[in-house]
Image (cartoon, rainbow, N blue to C red; front, side, top):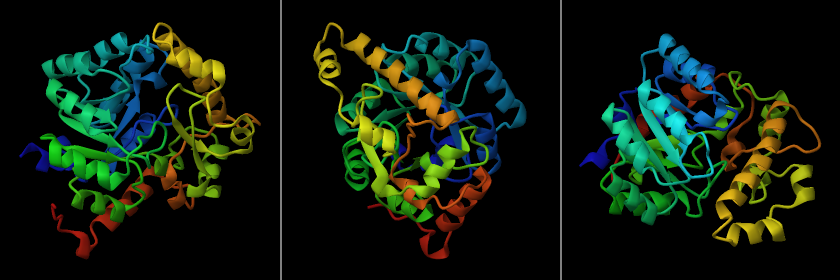
Length: 328
């Protein structure tokens, strides 16, 4: 069956994991380093303000490597750039698109016309079945251990439930901090993994050194969820600023988000305001610091290159006693 394919087989890469698309963190340097390491990587299209910048980064990566890479698209109505970004990604034939926070129907239809694969972020079986019916090539199972916009179901339960009920590959996202975790997820039936937090603490990431050092300094116990920043629950490091403002949306925010007539605009307003805070924090520490990360922060002990991080995961993945993947 198609879902028995592993991520390396699906994409034509050497190893079954990719660097997740991370807002303000992912860039061309990280992608190129990933491709040179035998894995793949994706970038949020929203990391680029203009179509010219988006096209330039795609051409830059393609000129450096012929290996597959992808982009993430926010496909809900709160993203005014969605249509233009999709047009560019299809025109330039990126290898795969990861969709988030909305209906991927239009992306799947257009991407498949040029041979671009579509992987859809899902947090439960209900949505996984919907995107499978639309023709998605795989689902990315965003579990409760993911960084950024996390799900509510634990890794093992979510992977096994999706594998048992879907006929397309299941890529896990969340809580994978080494090759042993990856092998365990694949034994549960996952095709591979999308990994983010570990790679924020890389030389290639253009975020501030304070952000990178925070990943070394803080641990799993310091990760909290907040719904004050993007209109959707977001996992961040519990800095003094996060402690001071709290993690729950205020009364007016909740009221707006519950009102069907203005919910779309309320989400957009909250997201714009929250993302500006994240952007400021990513490139320079202030009192109002918001650093996005997941529980796998626990495994970050130093700042390394993308290649060094990837090679460690690969070494652990290829340990002799772990080589044979057994499907449940």
